[in-house]
Length: 563
Image 1 (cartoon, rainbow, N blue to C red):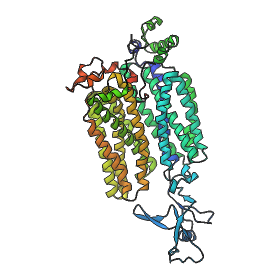
Image 2 (cartoon, one colour):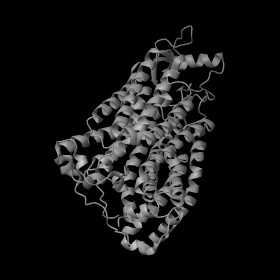
Image 3 (cartoon, one colour):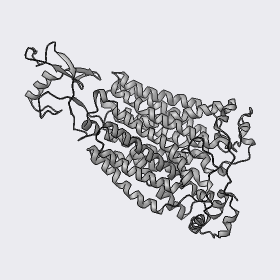
Image 4 (tube, helix red, strand yellow):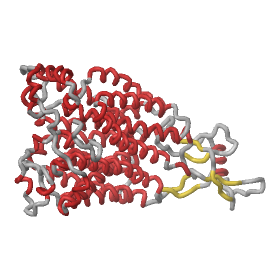
């Protein structure tokens, strides 16, 4: 008997399974928070060069004399269609320098400054203001966000592989501990290089938490409940976004904010104490006594009778045979479909994180903006749950991707041609774009799992996830364009890139076959059928597919033999 058949018999999602599922999902809140926390802890407030020799200089003008010294020391530059004090240059003056009627030097040279004052109307302090990560170092926050996503990519591979070798529970414990230390380490980072390394480790920890928790949570439930629990996982991630917006609004000092974000993670060790090992992994290791304990609890939670003798019929190696991943390129049809899927994973992740990061550049209240793009995910996932099995995967995915792209393009025009007093239009369009791309994210891994044949599904979905992580690494650089490019390109480039890529990805996805209510291909030859109806010829229905074949966090090329 296969393990899934056994779960179907004793209960797929009873009270014990629900409790354990909730426990593994709770730490995912921190993943949603920490993956994008750099938006606030490395926020760059308005700033200018400080007045040389003025010890109590502030960004706000203190008096007429203060304004006169500002004019004497800081040149005006045109930025975003208006004049303001330079952020990076000061006048080089001496006793022979002449000044005009506004106390501005005449024909004075300008040099780079090395000290700055910052606007404290929004943030009391950030890592940028404490470490002076401006001017020549203005990409520091972008690099830090990229390092988080780079750590996420590394963690998904390394910790995902180790969880297959040493068990889910040990790796999730390690991830919790690393998350605690990297969170507190961020607070005490003395300079940017240390901060970037710690944020990389934070990304590794986040990947370990979400990867292993996803595996444990889904492996405890029956096959017919996996889609539901898989999408529900996203609600906890989105809740992290919402909590981050609220905490950042309440706590304007970056170190206190990170402290507030990190303190609850200590309690995750208490959560870990109650989390069981994956029974599927225990079975693969021959640890039947431990499997029996968990199975008994599952059966009791479903009011089913469990007998230890039932374990004797379980097959510990019931997974499908796998072949090298490169074999997908031996079929022209599957190769083209694979490229489309990989591109879509890259784009959906880039747009998803890009819209989150760019939300603070749209004008208005940055905390409200970020809160809105976080809240937008909830109706998106609800719609996925309600209509995914009614209208099919492809219509929902393509429509949501194209709508997301259209919303980004419309955001561009609203920022270019509407008055600043109507910035709410751009914010509303961006929020709708995030809603649409979140729905796409909820569907893309299901499409991938159903499209690839069984013999390469595990590695193919893992490789798809790797493209998503790369998209997440690119996103902060695209969003940063709004801060470094001259007007009007600062408004055009981010929205244009996100919008055009989303539309192209949605259109390309139309070339993929609809996989809803079709039987899945077991081997590459079935996907090479020119009839276009190869799925109807297969014998393996969707609900019988092993979870690991649909796991978007699975390491690339990892086979199922160890499970």
